[in-house]
Image (cartoon, rainbow, N blue to C red; front, side, top):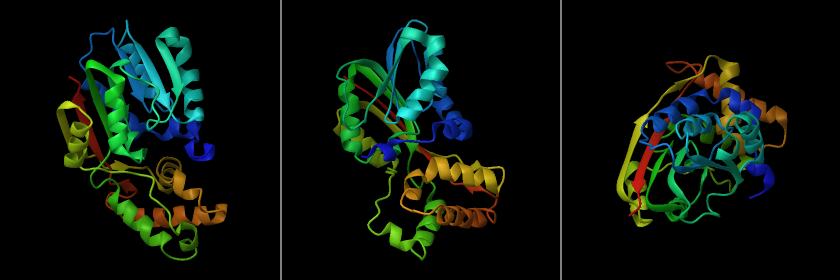
Length: 263
């Protein structure tokens, strides 16, 4: 994976990612912590949820991992002064994992659907946990943004976009609950629980919709279009269609909840 494909506009993501943060808060609410655990935040982004995790671990520590150096730089700026040595920031790929039997628990929100091999992902997560460790996570799953994806595929199959997407592989993996449960069990997790839930997200207007889609959903796609004018055309076409939805400028998000333990 090239360095450019790993990177995000982290300052924009930090500003527009309120939906992801709200979903992540619900994941954190499911945790039952003593307060002294060592926990991995797998795909920490700019650290908005990492801060809440650290506050719930007054005698513990968090390893915050992300593939993006931009994200980690922002997380360091937001967190280091308040949490000091209890926070460790690591740049790593979840498919090339540097940890083994290192954590009491793993938390992740809005990250796993960007990982192309879930069997290897789940195996790496299980290996990183200590005996009796736990995984509590959420990512895109099931029919996640299906309406949006159908529109995107129809647009990019036509000119002037089709030539740029010959052989393009979608950057997401959206498993359903049964597929994810089977994968977790194959990796060695027990007490596996998975579920999929709808969380329709509504943006305020066309400019907010375009900014969100550009920076959160279509980061990889837009790299394949060489001209900014064509990128704008694609985004405006999507926004025009979204304006006719009820509610307008809504995204049909679905979240896959994941829970498992190690023996």
